[in-house]
Length: 514
Image 1 (cartoon, rainbow, N blue to C red):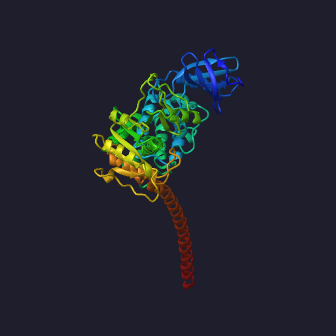
Image 2: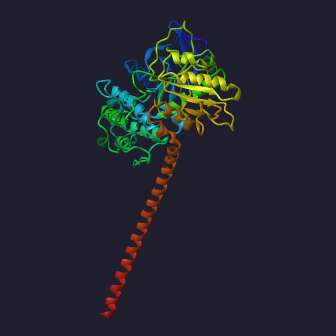
């Protein structure tokens, strides 16, 4: 087992170690017969909590939900037991928030709806509710825009959970009753953690108790989170289904809250006026920006540059059954050529990179097109010709001038609206968010009038400043309140002492008069 070229049970070729934890080691493996990746969790039979692992395996094997990894088999040999399950490549909500700081309300609600749907399934999975009991951002993966729940170490049916000698949970996420030895656990225990996660996604921090929403949060979302975080279970939502309905109602109240989550995918095509215009750089940056704004999307390489395959080699990313790869939340489909037939992925918004093939981009009839013009002096004619061609089509478009000299200005040719032309800022790494890039992309998207409400997030940095300022202000306010309470106590004590002294003085004066 020391070498990772081992074949387990005649069909699982081990590739590498994905991670190690309290219960054992997780390997990445390939099913030799199906050519599909599997995650294999190996636990030694000598492990003290081996029975807990067996219980987790038996529970997972019976569950079938899109948000829960599929367990294909449970195997064992002389020394170990093995849980063979679906391999999920994604980014945890913890890592997502760590890299972005916070998520927009649209995406918080979208992920919340998926999470409550998973929990509702779990709570109805058996004759008694199956409780997860350790909901936290690290245990939730986002895989191509879908939330997946992993690590069922502490999951238990209600009767088992309440009779267990020990209780587990994550500090900051666990409900108050989980800290009490005799506290009753039920479905509402998991709902408390959902409230924590919703606040965490929106602010980047765990909530304080009693709950105080940040000023930028909409009252409707704050009311939902406050109900989840009630100390007494009876005051929380009665079920995950009820919470799910409330979140869906809030999602539907927005004028276009589901515009980019609709069944028919939208396509934004990008093409350059010539080779080397920087189309791929701008396209990748757009995909990353849209994700950060709350619009899950898929970048598809439709040119012969080979960037998609090179990025896969560089990052070590793995292909899924649809040929998709992922790196830090950026999801892309390399160009495979016409001879490769793959299943169509579930996708609501596509960023199609046509390189410098303007004709191919127009022939695809996208919902919008971004023409990347090479702004260098010697490339002006090529940019002018491509822009004229694009403007003659009935497709919403925007022109982005790249490689423009610092002192040069964007000068659209005659007949082209100035509001459709933009100067691309310099940014070295398209996978990162730089100051100015968010505003640039939001201006381009607003001109296309395809992705709604981007203006709300163009100034998103203001909220990222408001959140820590609000938390700091709340902390100072709590200290002042505590100071005033202490001061009031001192005043009460002083007043009592003065009253007592005055009483004694009156008694003494009365005695002297007598």
